[in-house]
Image 1 (cartoon, rainbow, N blue to C red):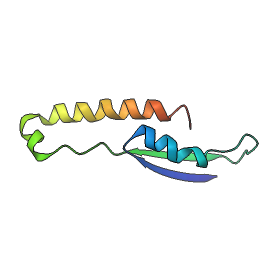
Image 2 (cartoon, rainbow, N blue to C red; image 1 turned 45 degrees about the vertical axis):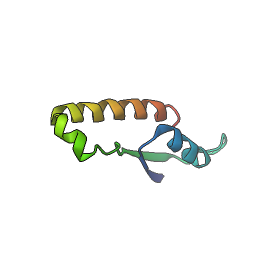
Image 3 (tube, rainbow, N blue to C red; image 1 turned 120 degrees about the horizontal axis):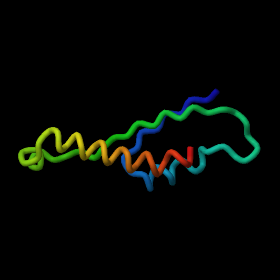
Image 4 (cartoon, one colour; image 1 turned 30 degrees about the horizontal axis):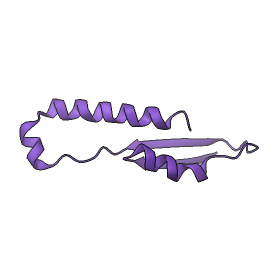
Length: 74
């Protein structure tokens, strides 16, 4: 079994990079994909005006959106 760890911050770029690594039609070698989402950083100026819980909520929504685009492919 192959283990592939992927760090992503943008779904479109990740799809472009993952296409060559996806198994071809006849391959049966199982692969375990470990996908780690790295949310874009928030500047220190923004962090003055946005609460910690709002930032965590934004990161959760961001991760859900990105993973929903990538999961069907893997």
